[in-house]
Amino acid sequence: MAVRIVSGCIIAYVAYCCILFLFQRRIVFPRDLIGVPPKPSLNIPGLEQMWLHTSQGKVEAWFLPAATGREGDPAPAVIFAHGNAELIDFWPLELKGFTSLGVGLLLVEYPGYGRSEGTPSQNSIKEAFLAGYDALVARSDVDPSRIVLFGRSLGGGAACALAAERPSAALILMSTFTSIRSFSRRFLMPDFLVRDPFDNLAVVRAYGGPVLVIHGRHDSLIPYKQGLALYRAAKHGEVLTYDCEHNDCPGDWKRFWEDMALFLGSSGIIESAQVPK
Figure 1: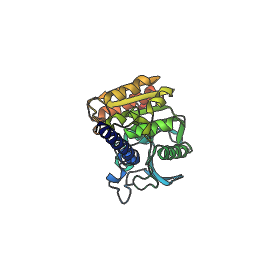
Figure 2: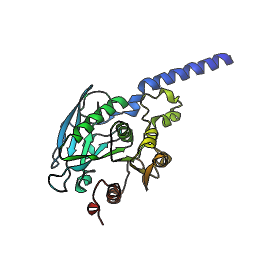
Figure 3: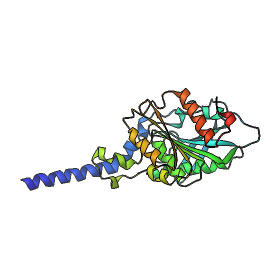
Figure 4: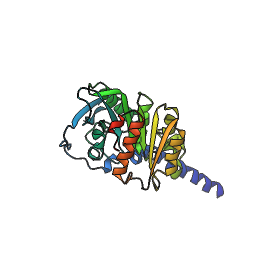
């Protein structure tokens, strides 16, 4: 009887792990739960729609040029990667502050999200962001030596995957995990079964530029200690702790833009004259 019980438990656990292995991408990339706007909201002055060509098809990206700076001079730019239950449609107004600081903004969609073709995975997302990066640095109005990679939540994985493949002047990680493998215990699943690990900790350890980690002290989805681990792993790290949860981070946008301007100024991305006093 004991042998049968143990054998039944083992079979049930193996079946459970098989189901998680097959369906984990629906958890990590819940694109089916996001309503897709039928048409992009392109009524923001200066916003340019781009289509990136990947092996899985066309991926959408939006670019907002810097609003300040000397005419004819190439400006720095931020490449932003959003969270797993978001679209690029959610972010132009929230992040438009970059353009006021003299920094362009590129929003790259994930394959299979919104109006983009393909299916999301670590490899397909990395391919899309590599295409976005290459298109960005080819622009005459962008300074390729001042590219900042910025990822929020799952987007931190996209930003780190890009940082491992292309040069950048700085890396910003907001509400980001050390690795998807760190969550395998929650699901009682061996970490070697994780299909898209996004090993951010390893990338941050090897990254030579300044790293800004932004995390909510009360984040219950991605614990604050993971943000601290990323900060401590960085060679040139800085951490900003906000009193917020996961989805309401940063909470105080006025403070966020003040902090962001100081970081960009101290990292040489923008001139000190552009930093608010």
